[in-house]
Length: 203
Ligand code: GTP
Ligand code: MG
Image (cartoon, rainbow, N blue to C red):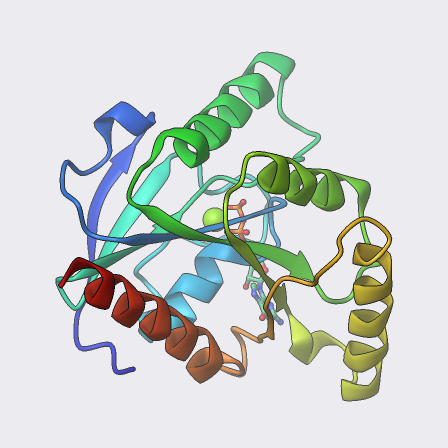
């Protein structure tokens, strides 16, 4: 799929203030600093679209970006950033979970996982919550440029094994590097397939 236009739409502190239209949307979620905003910029080939930072906790609101004037990419704040106050953490958690549970237009959640790390409880628990809540999701492994190709392969095998302890089936997954633009076509084609399916089901 070609991205012809990618524009910032709105930042919202809660789901009730998100864009009031019916276009499908795809949200990016994961731990702070995993590379959600960088991935959105990579997909859109615009480094300035979503704000990124080497310090965790950059994205604080629900950010909508309209793509080809037809569908949205949604950048969310990260979870699990220890240096926030308890009330701040609770507020962000509420924002993320409220958005995911209530947003009718949300067709798929991409859970971002840093490919360098061993499976983390916080991510596994979040995916379990998505499963229990019946929210369709896929996994995007990020920062693949930071380790060797062999290590990427081994880490993903280990991750799959861990998931199969609780899941009967593995979700679709993608391997990406925002730095090297790897995995861009895979993710965009996947979104396009879902968009096409939605169009068919409407017509
Ligand atoms: P929060 O908004 O704080 O939750 O973080 P985020 O998940 O949006 O992360 P962000 O995109 O701001 O990236 C965090 C840091 O990781 C930045 O310094 C990015 O440059 C870096 N980064 C993100 N993706 C990649 C990648 O694929 N490769 C490399 N080498 N660095 C990356
Ligand atoms: Mg961010």
